[in-house]
Amino acid sequence: MNQNNNPIIQCQNVSIIRGEKTILDDVSLHANQGELVAILGPNGAGKSTLLGVLAGDLAPDTGAVHFGDVQITSLTKPELALRRAVLPQQVTVSFPFTVEEVVEMGRGPKSTGADQDLVEMAMKRVDVLEMRNRLYRSLSIGEQARVSMARILAQDTQLLLLDEPTAVLDIGQQEKLMMIVRSLVDDGRTVIAVFHDLNVAMSFADRVVLLQKGKQVAVGAPRQTMTAETLSTIYEHKIDVVTVNDDTGPIVIPSPRDRN
Image 1 (cartoon, helix red, strand yellow):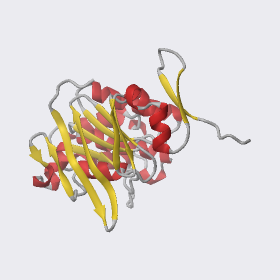
Image 2 (cartoon, one colour):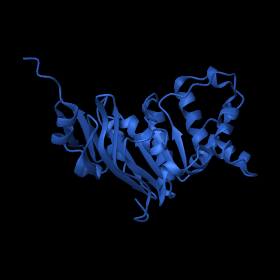
Image 3 (cartoon, one colour):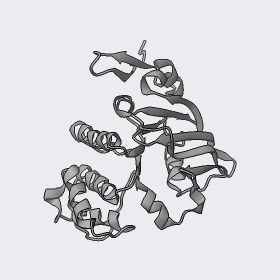
């Protein structure tokens, strides 16, 4: 849960317009210390675009983004790298770097005496330490995803921005990664993540932001916000939200199509 009410990052009335198309339309959100905020919505809703705005990689046409009291547009790329780490949907490594070398790239903006310790801890945390000397390009997609996560952990920032971190992982790897993310949040880090898997957000997020066609439809705690009615409207398909037992909480299930 969030530890205080001072946002680590916030965007206000952000819009992105490309030609005649509005990608984001007057979106506002914030994330506090010790909070995991999930961005949800169907394909084309503007989720990755919003994450790019929060990272400082995309300049909004209207609105503003602040890290604390500092407007993001006033920060240089190295200054941004000290404040947030970004995990994109796809990581391309063209050269024959080893796993350890890829993780070490996360230390580029800082270069302190603690570099090697942070690299070691990051690899150990996502269970890639034993493959440290293997070439990144030789790994499976799931292994590459874990190495990429280790790289941003090694960056050692307060804020982590994750774009579909569990998309290519099997169910066991997904659960392990989200437990790592949750432990970072519980230790006081701040995470904003895009998810396609609604059950991951339901299980792990403190708050969710629901987008539809670039508009912010709802914001709030998962159980209060991710209702069957709201999700069915956003995804344009009947969705049920059911409680299996009190320990696991609600799960999201697409309803079968009526074949009659």
